[in-house]
Amino acid sequence: ISNVSHELRTPLTSMIYAIANMLKGVVGPLSDHAAKYLEMLQGDCKRLLMTVNDILDLRKIESHTLTLAKTRVPYGRLVRRSAETLAVQAEQKSIDFRIETGTGLWFVNCDAQKIERVVLNLVGNATKFTPDGGHVHVSVSQDEARPGFVCVTVDDDGIGIPKDAVTRVTERYFTVGDQPSGSGLGLAISKEIVEMHDGVLSVESPVPGADKGTRISFCLPTVEPPMVLIVDDDPDVLRALDEQIVEHGYRVLAARGGQEALELVESESPDIIILDLVLPDIPGRDVIVRLKADSATVRIPIVVL
Image (cartoon, rainbow, N blue to C red; front, side):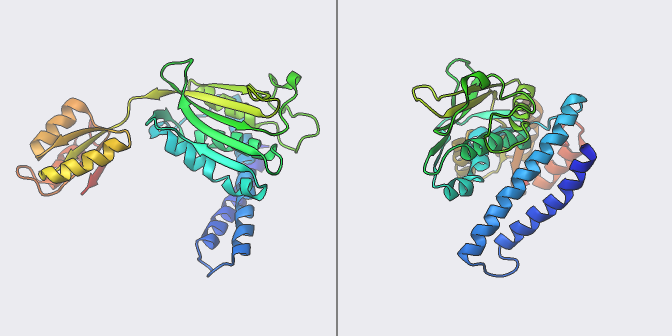
């Protein structure tokens, strides 16, 4: 099964790449109808690729070889970008599709691609099982029951899950009745991925306070935002950058010279550096050379401004 899955993934990836290029206009202007058909093809290819990846990941989970490439990411933005890729699918069914990421600037230490797949799976299921003209609502909020956790909740007013199946839908290969076909792997692997991130996935049907629909939530622990070191001798530039970066939830350090920057790197270990090359003491180029020559700082990304 793993060998066949690998063989399927290669042409699927090529098709997704070709469709994306066509939508970008590589082969010339497209009519609205042509673009809509290509978007439908793109969505179906991505869903099939997700099933193939589920099978491959299941093999890795069973052999304990699935690894996570974690990094601290702004969570609301990740969820919004992931869910928005299914907006066309919802539009085709005239579904009222809403995404609310709240005002919190939460950061989560996660494998962004794996969590994106969890979001796509949950939102894709909600869209698939919601009738034409229904509602799908994706939200991100602080977990009231678990301090230090942030939750993604997907609500729909679709057909719901039978009471006796609610506790089983996250089991591998389990499918419900005569509903649209699926591998029975998506929710099971989503649960495994969430738990690998020290999170919790829960299923409720009907939606609390309603007589139908399904609510699926998963909660992950939040982490401290990354630290950005800005190095510039111009106070106006420092102020402008500081305001913009803080607005997105990051922590900020500021230095007006190369020596001060090197000292802050040693004492505070920033996650990324925004560096002006023209500084009053040590030139920015020399700062880069010193940081890249030191094994303790060589991996800190530097953006030259």
